[in-house]
Image (tube, rainbow, N blue to C red; front, side):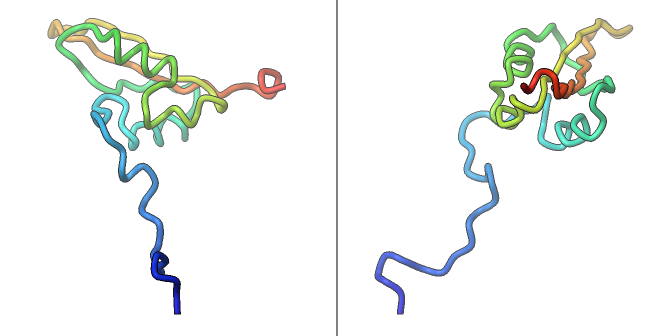
Length: 102
């Protein structure tokens, strides 16, 4: 009934076949929360030392799970040393205004 190289099949979940390292700081679940409350700061994690590369990847929107949102807005990251000597990481999503889109 179907040609030899054709079969009935549903496509896999988007991004289910991603390769490479999975995000550990700004995960898909955290992205959904940040997108649902734009402009609101959230503590998204604590690290032993200051982050630089991860911060740059998030703010430049090159991290794989957020790169598709580049035209919608941007993520901002702040780092603060806490009382235990570790670094708290804060993030918020800033939507692009309609003025910026034109």
